[in-house]
Image 1: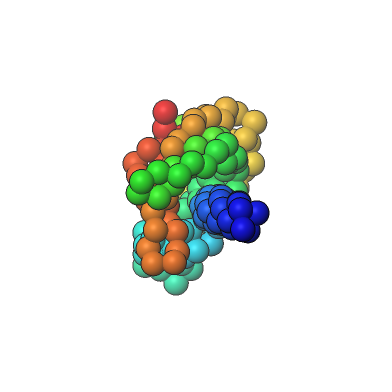
Image 2: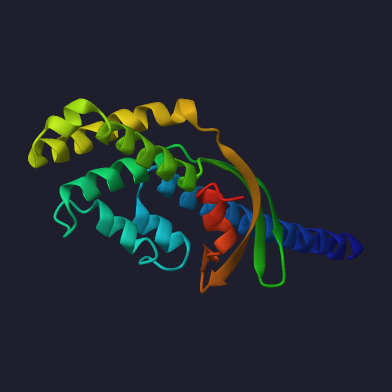
Amino acid sequence: MRKIIAAACVLALLICILSGCGEASQAREVVRDYFTALNEMDFMTAGECLGDPSIYLTVIDDLDPAGGSTLYDRVQATYFVTFVYTNLKWKCLSVRQTEEGFTARVRIESYSVEEITQKVETAQRELMEKPEYAKADDEKKYLMLINNIPEIYMTLSRELEKKTSTVELQIARSGESLYIVPSQRLFDAIGGVL
């Protein structure tokens, strides 16, 4: 009888341990899904990982070829978003259970959106100071600025240094699902704001 009770206690302990590990694994998975979605520019999935599919709606609108913005703005937004999110590196360092859910420590390497913006503005200003730009008509000037954008972004990774920060992400439960609680610290780390 004691062996049966001991075996039942061990089994109950194992179930408790394994169910906790399963949830920690699920928390780690939501972190992976979020950053993978960002790297792949799947902003609807990234928003779902934050518990709000519409959180990246402005980014999605900026990339919409049928959007109301100018061609220059759409080209600029496409290169900017692609550069920021495809160059984003991350690593989940740990996940621990808390009373509210989980906390995941994640190291994020990213380029500073402020530095990217400054470099683009400087490069466009330098183009506008060239004699061939000054001699061109308005339509040609507009096309020169648009055509300069790919060149600018090709050189950015050589000119800029990545910023590294470690962020603690709160992961909460909604029914059977887990989601990352959006925070300014997370968005700052993604944007290279230290």
